[in-house]
Length: 163
Ligand SMILES: CC(C)(COP(=O)(O)OP(=O)(O)OC[C@H]1O[C@@H](n2cnc3c(N)ncnc32)[C@H](O)[C@@H]1OP(=O)(O)O)[C@@H](O)C(=O)NCCC(=O)NCCS
Image (cartoon, rainbow, N blue to C red; front, side, top):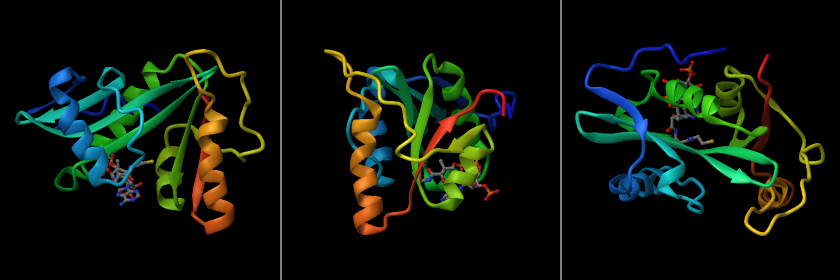
């Protein structure tokens, strides 16, 4: 499904983040209780409406893979297509096999609209760690533990370009 042609509400623009956005990005991510690590503004796309940052999301780099993460839309702006638009743009920027982790069935259904398919932890690719890049599987290992030990409903998903 390609939703990149969906129009933004008037007064809104989608753009790459700048250093001036870094605290607004942190605020959005912290307030949504998402993973607070690797919030480098250089990796983010944002949506600005009437000069306020109302949405953000990023593609994190790992060895041999990327992760779509930190997707947030400010509560007052949800349900108007901003999350979908940003997700499609983030997918379009990916240059490596793309993965994500999310909580619960509603979010996994949201991502399945774009071509993400659930994948088991065992089936995640294990690329060798490089000097600069950690591996995605090592990062997801914590969530897998939480899933097993604490029954946290984490879903791992892999992007399939043609689905
Ligand atoms: C998930 C989220 C980014 C969607 O943004 P949005 O702009 O509201 O999304 P859109 O308007 O493009 O699409 C609406 C879809 O979002 C999903 N969605 C909306 N609110 C949701 C919620 N509270 N929990 C899970 N999914 C939600 C649903 O699939 C919804 O589709 P539906 O109305 O047919 O059920 C937004 O709800 C959000 O910021 N949630 C909190 C942070 C979060 O959970 N991020 C995902 C991390 S993996």
